[in-house]
Image (cartoon, rainbow over all chains, first blue to last red; front, side, top):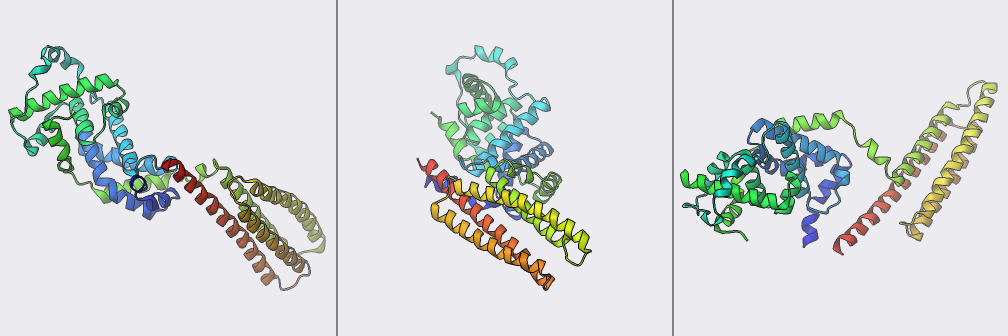
Length: 182
Length: 181
């Protein structure tokens, strides 16, 4: 079963490797919306996300020879999109981990004081996530929506695993605050 | 462990895919970028078997071109020079082809039957080629002989392509084995 999932769209991938434009387009069609949404969550700006996703597909098709079915094509592509989004944010000086200045007063808050959200309302949460500072939004998205663990996040963001954990917890606390304020 | 809040978000993560990409606009950009850089050529040369195939095909192509140039309706003196040149090139490329055949013979990923089948077919085509070359020098119906020579080349290329496909397939199944392990 597992290998069936890993080899998903294998036909399309193999044909795309040899440069077949129709197969490349089919792969694009299958994944473009998901990839666009990932990049939107990372960057928050339509034009930026479009640039990154275009660039990611071009890169993916050029580097397809190095894709060896160690993961699904989708997660391979997703990793490219996430890496490119993070790099793009860095280039544009959108703070990826803008958390240092927050950490001073956040440190004073004791761990036990983590509030519980008063509402379990997905629309409220969606709104609150868009209001988070970029760095917080990225780490929340990576962990809760993209399903990356702290090891993967540490690789993507080029931070240590413990930094990833502590920053995630700060981001979550901020998110709950916002949800309760809305 | 995820708490209730985290689980709730995680379970509803599909809700976050709210944006629709501008597909045609973005594809146009991707396609023009892919067209601008023709990257396919470069990686092929990294693999040894593709290098072999490319060399062999290039040799046949040159051969075909030279045979076409060497039409017997030119001056006999010139003809002699061309034939001499052709002979030298012929020898050179025959060595090269036999070296490639040797490589195929020594290829570790090929079964004995595959190799035999490939080499037998190659020999057959060699014989056919010799006969055609003879007819060419007899100045028989040139156009038809040329066509036959071209189809002879085509068969060789096809043969090599088949072989490469077999190598690739066996390689893929090896990869799968590794994956399952």
